[in-house]
Length: 150
Image (tube, rainbow, N blue to C red; front, side):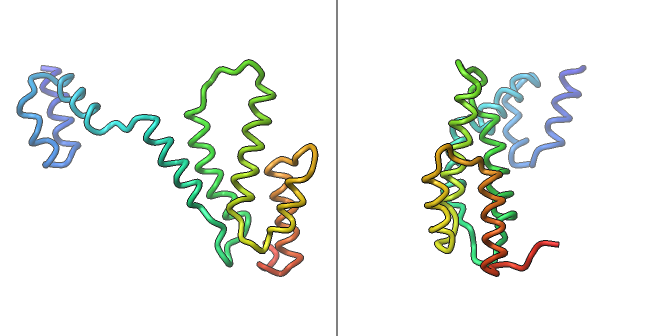
């Protein structure tokens, strides 16, 4: 009886073109396994797509640095969920991750920021992404690229 309830629920929550394929299965588990094999995306495929999105992301003319940084942060946050949870030295891992994000962020900026990006990359130690963003926001305002945020 529970099997039939679950089969009905699954059938009623998917599109008709998908539910038509359930006739060959006897149990809800068989249907669930079928759906899992067919539609669950592997972490590697998702990571590939996120990395691709990150590399294609470019700071657009007229776009504020804050908005652009927010777009990158959404992708970074999703990638964090796929990172290994183990590490021999958490501080080294954090520093590596922060450096990687800094490079990705700076690479995607418009050419207007090339001089300041070069200056940032030659610092030792490198600043964090947040510190860099603050400096770039000040530069954005100084150059009058966008009006000062309210």
